[in-house]
Length: 144
Length: 144
DNA sequence: TAAATTATTTAGGTTACTCTAACATAGGTG
DNA sequence: CACCTATGTTAGAGTAACCTAAATAATTTA
Image (tube, rainbow over the protein chains, first blue to last red):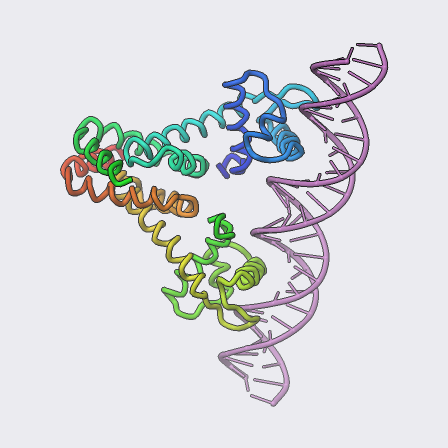
């Protein structure tokens, strides 16, 4: 993250833009503002910076687009998000809302290799001892 | 974290102070500065703020101590760190240096419940299918 | 199509964190 | 015990976030 000269917050903006576009097509400052829980002027500030850095195409009052670089970052972040959330819910049996919150933070820090190992581990356990996993998840559920 | 009115960075300062004291006894501004990779004036600023918030006992040129509240936070953070790092290395087979870095970040965000489930899951797997786990870790090692 | 509403942008300010340069203190040594 | 060096502190400034209030542009509607 730091190696790309992009902050956690900037990554969050890119991811938000990416997901909004995926669901709605054309998006507006207002949408990003709502999604991230900040006021419109903060969004405009962020768009200017992201545009200078080449992650977003943005002209005043014009439509908001991600550049190729911006899409790459957003997709990579979102992939990590999915993977983490899945691991937390399907392997550890964490409630979805909590899993989401944890994934939302960790996605910006987790090393590639850690994410990779989580995926491989999940696959391995699901293949090699599905019953044990099922039993663990069942016990977790019973506790709550 | 946010609920206690304490920032990620403040948590990092408390944890650093806690660990330095554990290893060296009396600590100095210089030690904290070195450990966190910031200049001494930044440490002094932080100490003032932490002192105002009641996490640190600090008077100019005097020794630096954690309050009860400060110790509680530092210990809780450090416990999460230990737990995460162990999970990453002993269950997922991630190299120790990477595991450390990931733990260092995630410790400030992870929900209590997620940490708890990681611990329980590790225990469960180690009890129920130790051989499968061993095999997984062996395969991971062979790849690198 | 002109007026009213909604959305966006600019201007200016706040907070948390960092830094460098300059100043102050404490402790060890001649 | 005075001086020198280490360490610590203050002052002042920069950056990345955020905000509110005011101004401008775009869109809807009467």
